[in-house]
Image (tube, rainbow, N blue to C red; front, side, top):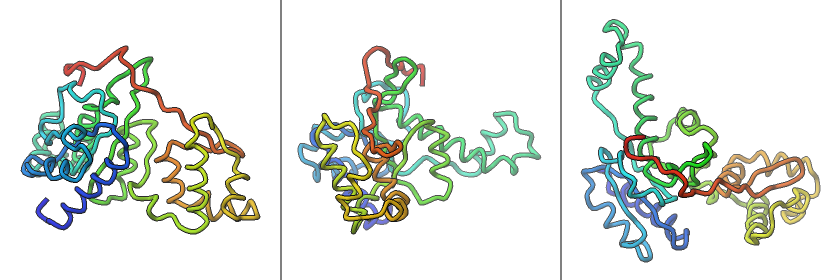
Length: 254
């Protein structure tokens, strides 16, 4: 990243996420030309040398070395010159006179391909009974109106939330979120009644809770990011599939 201010914000944002995650390992995939990014990140992380590992784009495929890492960060993305996408189109059998019509589709397909390859360096590649291993994927990218649709197609069944959504919570919405975190901090608690959360937030009426809290986009992102689902009158703890050692993709699989 040429913008040093943006680079510093990205590194600090990743460092904050790592430091909030106790002692778990993290993999960061970044641009090759920014050789110092991983070292700069490690310097801001408690026990950074032992917790943070790095790969650069272009080397984000064909390795099982990080299969136990459940937190993967993608910084940026691989893009080609237009001639590169045209060459891919021709190699795929697209007629020359139709290359312009398929340019956008080719770009999106390659973006999805590289996101999938990079993500599959981590624990998501550990599969059992047809289910992917538990993993969190953090994406640092240029804002886009279509990015969430692309991610849902690339990672079917995934939950998507804005990285800093919790920072935007305030007032009664934050009271509701804080109460859920407090209750689910007890591992024996599997669900919490919505009415209980509404009362903790100081909201009398169900309609007000529905419109001001449940429909708040940052609160929805908070639920997704914290593995909390809703079912009828309950908030429920989501038990994501745990990565196991029954089967691991080989480099040839990817």
